[in-house]
Length: 500
Image 1: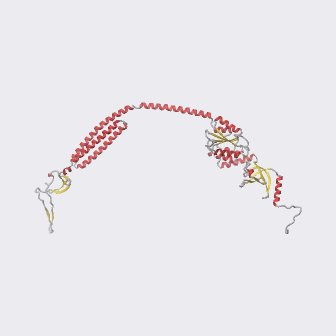
Image 2: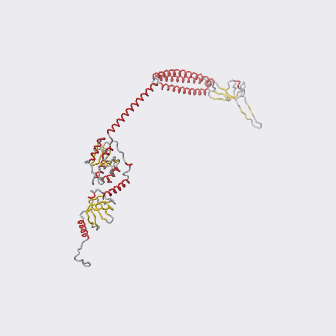
Image 3: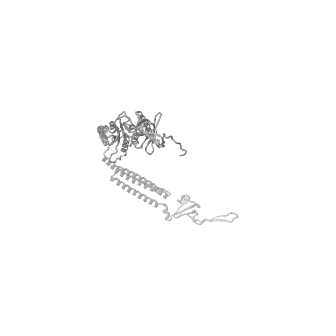
């Protein structure tokens, strides 16, 4: 073809893909399986489930990939800055003309790296508040059900059950888990969450307290209890949780998130329940002290009641005295009422003779008698009320009320009779019989010598008044005429019959 350069016959021609595949086969044949130590840089987790990152040291970088199926089996999750040892197969990726390692195993590079990762994780979780003291829940004093998260075959579960049986036997529910290896962390977290999800009324009882326990071991052996999934599950547990992982000198992150840390699994059982014998002895002592205090209180009150009873008078004697006093008071009250009414009658009679205006006097007398009757009623009611309070359920009260009612009726009848008498003495009754009253100004004329000829008077009959002038005894009417000079005389006639 025109324009093409002819290649020498001894140099083969390859496509880009062929060169990529050739390099890939060469690398895979030369490095079947390797272990690479380095620091993880820029890890990424796409939606496919794979993991991509770089491993680097002071002078070189290599790409790494963990396929989704392998990643689910790994105990570690790649984090930026983590120093690890990756085991896998070196291969090439023709799409980028780069080489990489396909990781099938990942582990931390030495105990120093583990401690560094542990400290960084502790600071991170502490900053989120998972270890705050104010979030710790108090343990129940005597739980009915104890939940245990541990291996069902180790010595730990036997030690806990033995210690619980010695101190205070309780119902125990065990959630078996792996306590070491890749499956340990998710199983422990699932067990804590599963216990919290139990229905209190379900077939499997919901524990009142949880114990997460494991025996001693190295930092790598206990690493499952440093995983975030376990720590977050412990911090989110609504059931109070006791951490008993390792020996007294071992510390894991679950110890910080738990509500109480026990140095050993056996100590966790001691923290969970009290000693039954000591509790029985304490309750017995409290019962004896309560009974003794109750007896002393009853005896003291019995003495107080006896002393008070000696100072009380005889109730029957009190009733008899009150009854006698009531009879005496009722008798004196009747006499006093009659004397009072008699005096009031005499006073009203005297006032009726002296008063110049009988209607006003009668009205005043009625008001006074009404006031006196009201006071008498009030006094009688007060007397009756006192007698009623002192002599409940006694027949004397009824008799007293009847007597007072009769006296009040008698008094009202006497008052009405006196009123009728006064009304009969009224001068207006006299006027109705044909008489008249002679008034001179504001005075009543009672004798002829009190008037003179020419005095102007007023005559009052029962149906009205008329003016009058006192004249001579002849009885002839007089006329008085007055006339002014130079004018027509004006005449004023006053005609009035003779009064006297």
